[in-house]
Length: 57
Image (tube, rainbow, N blue to C red):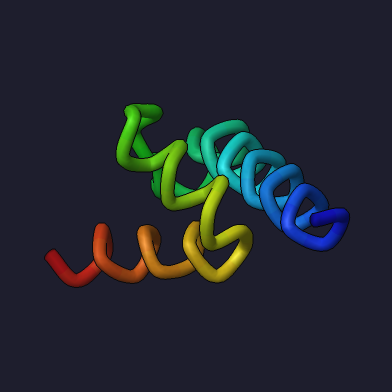
């Protein structure tokens, strides 16, 4: 349980960092239920997956 919570918090932090650095990098992820769910359930790999999908699609 502790590992899941840590992963969720790191995912939310990664999502926030991507959006904060978006002005410099040009990569911005919309904050919606889907992106929050992916960041919370999958953590950093979920945020990475959303960035890759956003870049490819």
